[in-house]
Image 1 (cartoon, rainbow, N blue to C red):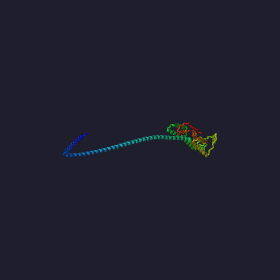
Image 2 (image 1 turned 90 degrees about the horizontal axis):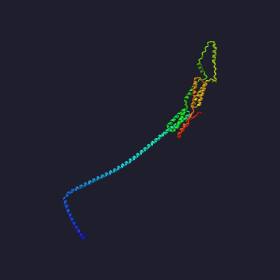
Image 3 (image 1 turned 120 degrees about the vertical axis):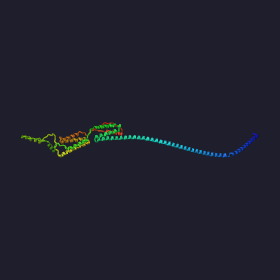
Image 4 (image 1 turned 180 degrees about the horizontal axis):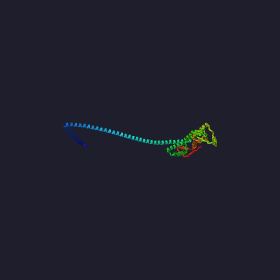
Length: 375
């Protein structure tokens, strides 16, 4: 750029500046003039602006407080919601724990019920086994008792009752494995039923009655009392002598009646003295007592031997035509018909079978019933 151009530009700028200053001065004069005319309206507007400013500030403060309150309320609601959610989660967790505990308790109860049911079943089974064991023990004892009564006391009736009671016990056990034992037992019961029963008490009472009746037996050779009774019972025939020719015959008849000759065809027993008759009665009573003791003890030979001796002495020393003697001899003959020691069966097989069943649990074989022979 040339210096002329620069000088031209500066001139233009200064002219512009001067023109601007003039315009500003003109405007300020106009404003001053207008301000003087409008002082009063401007003051009222300022008060309004101030009021508006304070109202705005108050409104803004209220809005701020309202916003802050809403924020606090929102924060509180958020915190409350968090607490509620936490409580709900806690409650859910507790509920789940309680549910798990309840399920565990229910499972434990079910398990306890199953154990109780199992234990009860075992208890019932054990009690059944225990009852069966008692029944088996009773049956074994009864069979052993029957063996002892039969072998030692020869008491068939008691042995039979004991065996029937043992069979009842075995029937209550209801074990099929006991069938062979009960079969052996039934055979023994039938064998004992075949043995004739003897009324030992009745026979003993009969022997005691015979012993008490021995003093009433009349002797074969009558004593003075018996002779007087027989003479009183006889009615002598009247012998009226009509003439002298019948006198010798009557005298001879009286003489023959004084002496009687009898042919006994056997030795006669001499008359017994009173003390001998006493001892004879005592000996006969002793023989009958020995027969009674032999009966109770089962000694068949002694029983029959004492009865035979008693019968022999009665026939030898007492009047066999008298009713008392005949009745006693008939009673003794009836007593001699009884066999007080019949052959007894061997029932030990039943005891062996049940003993084997209890100890080994094996089924015994049914043996052949044996009968004990009399020696």
